[in-house]
Image 1: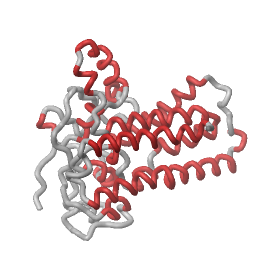
Image 2: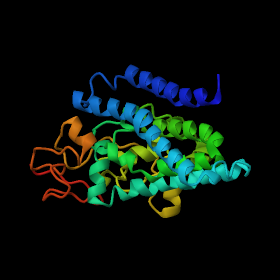
Image 3: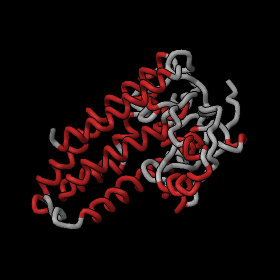
Length: 293
């Protein structure tokens, strides 16, 4: 089995295992997910790895080979550690800022909103964002550039590791609970929770309101590395998990509006997805308030 096949199988296998464990725990049977939610999640799960990411890579590789053919594999002989650092900064750190921007900009929020309106966690939440959220994500474009420049071999290992951590951070299995259960593991927990995203820190990001003392809806933006939140002052670590999730504009638009906004828009004038700018636009950087219908 070649490295590329293994690279693809690792996250797919991990997703299936976590999904089965969550199903055994009853998450997908008597939950708050509607058929609309499942449609959003499954389409997002399919379109990102089969259409959006490959499309961006093909476009970047074609453009670079057409206009800068001499740059192909330019950095291939550099140390593997430089390659890893390049992906951590240009992909993971840029994704931290992209994610953070989507909680500051009201227009960007509309592309990220599908990720937060669901009222439960689970691996299927991981990739539910509008198509344009990923199509415009700088980290994917920069990763394609790094691959062209000769860092493709490292990407085969970097990407599945990142996907496993992100899937685990959204999973209702809450794998980090054992770290907090035993006092002897506390030093290890201290290191892990400040290095990578964990269910505790990422669940806090999805929590409904900071009023519960656990949730941190406008922080904990890290994807692979949580250390970006530590460095840039957006971290909150409680070793607890919120009990309520969601977002404060609770209108449930059809799946095609949530995924294809602003190309397709809501017919409901109360919805913030009715137009690029509406009278009901909410500032995602402020805490939750009950939505007045």
